[in-house]
Each structure stands twice: as structure tokens, then as C-alpha cells.
Length: 339
Image 1 (cartoon, one colour):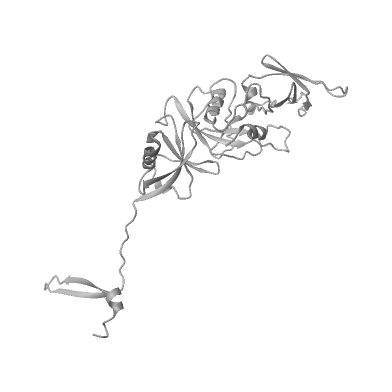
Image 2: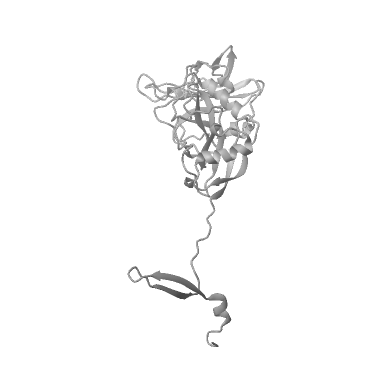
């Protein structure tokens, strides 16, 4: 009795009763097996806390970080339903994305499970104006922001060598079949109005014009960069390939005068040894005020080969796989972009 009379045994030891009955003789055996501990299943939480970034459709509203509680075995639709209760936006007007390194790493389908989302993922939920991705009138286009940089080894100043991404990407609703380059530009200005300042008509600033629509042509691209200081303009004109097969020469221009919708460029150098050249370039009034350029890109933010956004007033050929890159020059970004 004294040997088994222990407070440790009384508190930490137990007896597990087990009953066994013989199927032949029907004798019942009852045994008590001592144990120190038992493995008991702990209750598993059926819900999971998550944090998402909510990007509302009105451009004047700032994105918000919102904490949600969703079922562990739920779907992306359950996530949107939980978010809908807090932002008062229907769940079918949301698009859930995983943003990594300033680009869309993944755009989730409504039926995918939330178990595909890791705790370290940056989840952005965008409000869109349509309830069906296959809407016949509107389509959703992913938008990236890029720094426009040029290769120092190439003579063409509009040859983009690398385009590092910055900021958070956007989802923009555009007309499916009738969207032109200028209309896409205006829609982007409206979407970015909270952190982009649009220059006034009287505001004179240095701009960089690129003719990306000529990239697929067999002819050389004529590129021009036009800046302004008071009444004098300075421009560089890259001549086309000469008839003898030599590489086009770059001629320095001094003065640009505007007459109507045309730019007349003349050389005012007094040195008789310098070549005197003149050219006339027709520019739409809206193009001369643009603070960024648009290019077709892939999901990684690089230029999409074979797809060119032509600024000719005609509808752009956009598909559900089209990504748009908004290229900002350093001067324009420093002056007009304030994220």
C-alpha cells in the first residue's frame, strides 16, 4: 500500500479500462492498463485570419488594408463575400490578385481555394465596374508602371534597354472593340487622378515622344525629342537611312516654331560648315501634352513582341491576354507622379 501510495501516481497516472468479450465462450475480460499520458486531438480552427489590400474603383478613394476572417476550406468567392460586408461592394465586382515585385504574380479565379494563398503573399482586391469578365462591351486590362530608361550603347534614344517596374499595378476597364490610343490614355489619367498631376495648357515642360507604331515597319524609325524653354525649342531629328546604304545621321536643330497643328524645325547655326536642315512634323495637339507613353507588355512587364499600340485614331487590338505598360520618363515622373 505504501509503495503505491504516491501523489505522483494519484495525479499523473491513470488506468485505461478496456473490455474484451470472447466470441466463443462469451467470457468478458476487463483490464485496467496504467498510463501516464494520452494523445488527445485538439480542436482545429475552421477559420483563418487574412489581410488584404482593397483598391476601390473611384480614383479619389485611397487603397485600404482590411483584416478578414475566412473559412480555411473556403474559396476566393468566400473571401470576396467577407470583404463585401465591410466595403459595401458586391462580391462579383471584385478581382483578387497576388502582387509581387510591382506586377501581378497571379490573378485568382473565384472557385480557387484560399489555401493557395500564403501568409506572406500580398493580396490586392480590385473593384471593377462589371460583374462578368466576358462582358461584351468592356474588358479588364492589367496596367503596369515602368521607368523609361535608354541604352547608352544605342544611337536611337527611344530604344528601351530596361524597364524596371514601380508602384502598384492597376486593373482598368476599357471598351472591348472601340478603344483608341488616346482614349486609353485619357482613361488612365482619370484612374490615376489621385496621384498624377495633369499639366495645364500653359505649363511648358520637357517631353519625350516615341513612335512605337513604326517598330514593325521595314523602314527606319524617325524619332524626335522636343523640349521647350520660353519661346525657343530644341530638338534632335534622326534622319532615315540614306540611299547609299549609310546609317542615318543625327542633325542638331535649334528652333522650332508651331503653326497650327504642325512643328516647323529649322537650323539657326551661323557656322557655314554645318548642314542646314528643315523638317515638318505633324503632331496632334493632345499628343504634345502627354506625360507618359503606352506599350503592350507581357505578364512580367516586358515589351510584348509583335503587339504595337499605334496612335493613329483607330481602335487598338486588345485581347484578354493584353497587358499595358505605362512608361514614365524621369522628368515627367518627378514632376507629375506622386504616389
